[in-house]
Image (cartoon, rainbow, N blue to C red; front, side, top):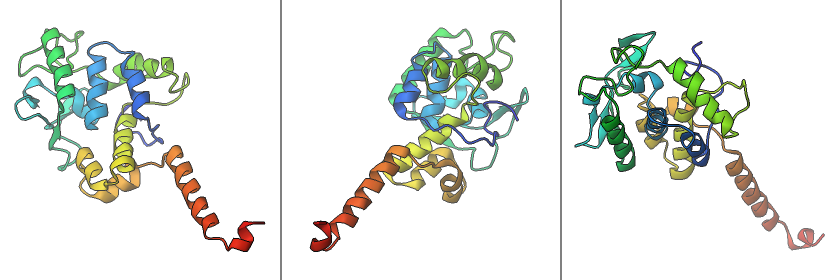
Length: 219
C-alpha cells in the first residue's frame, strides 16, 4: 500500500481544524498550498497532483477535477462521480494565485505542483511530499508520533467528519467528497469525535437524572 495515498485502508487520523493549521503553519510553498488545498476541498492527493493551472477556475471560484496522477502516470479519476468541480473559497484562491506568481511553471498547461527535478514535465509524487514534508510537519506539531502512519487521506476524513459534526448534513459531506451515495460517506468517512461523544453522554445523563422521581433524586 502506498503511504499517504487515497487507497490506504488504515484507520485515518481525524484532525481538528486547529491541528491542521499547526501542520500548515510549519510548511512553506508549495507544500503549504497543497495541504491547504486538500484540507479545504477533500480532493484526493492523486487528483491534487494531477491539477494543471487550466483546471483552476478563478472566475467561477471552483477547481475542475478531470484526472489523477497514479504510479507516475496521468490517468482518469477514481470514479465517474469523482470527475466533478470542487468549490474554491477566496482564501484558497489567494494562496493559489500567490503560488502561480512564484512558480516558474505557471502556464495553463503546467502542473500546479510540478516536479522541479523533472523540470515540470510531471507532477511531484505523493510519497515524496508525504515523507519529506507532511509527516515531519505533523510530528513537529505534536499531532502524531515519529513512525506513526499518517497521510493526506486524513485531511479528507477530517473535512467530512467536521462537516457532519458541525453542519449535521451528510449530503454536504457527500458532495464535497464527490461520492456517488451518502452511504459511502457516512460509512467510511465520518468518524466519531471524542469531545462530541462526551458532550452527548453528559446531556443524556442529565436528562436521565432529571427524569428520576423526586424521592429517588434526593437519595
